[in-house]
Length: 301
View (cartoon, rainbow, N blue to C red):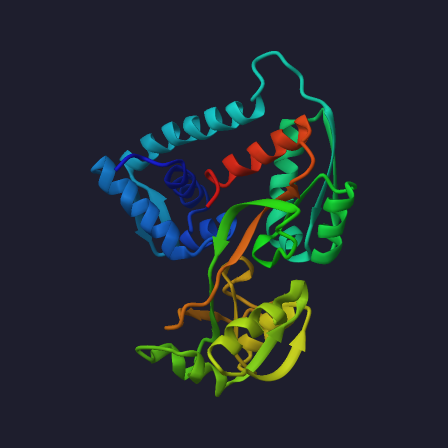
């Protein structure tokens, strides 16, 4: 098995943050995915790269040496993305990129900042819109590209897309909940619990699809467009919810713990990606943005 850029990125994130959980949040993936990637990397290299400490993880001697190489690899990839048209050619132009609320709040800010720094001559404008308005903007031509939940995309006849990463949905529970000790957890068991429903970015519509497929309904005690409200209510023991790893954080604003469980049933992932009009050729600036985002996420997924 060959070394992958994703493994390198996950290792750098864990080594630099000192926490697997922080690396997972930075990469918008699960902690288990970071751990698995680093373990695969260690197996391929035949050395231990990280050692656990009471406060997190830190590079071993071999890990510190590899970290220098890893940073060079990441820098070389960024340089390649930064100059896709060849050395010495300045890329300029304008680009309007739309994003949905969840994507802009939990994913896009750091990539937007990095793109602006890498391509200062591209005038990029970010706008936050609802999914329906984004699709209309793409078709009408005043949105060049969107970073959105492509798993919610409706008009696939006129809009093409590329998935950047898939964020799985899992059950959120308060720290003392009885289901944490269960061997298996099913949607039927979740249906018996008080449920906090997130509504932003069509979350309720998406959730109803897999609930209806299972011929079940959640016992919704509160519906809200605020992820932080969901987080606080779950952590306080008022109910449970099913949401994606992208918006998961282990602590509420009140510093109460939120735990995760994977359900037995297959729950569709929340897919983040790029979308653009099929009928119009992409501008040079749009092509560069697409390449940048694809490489930044390790080649899509």
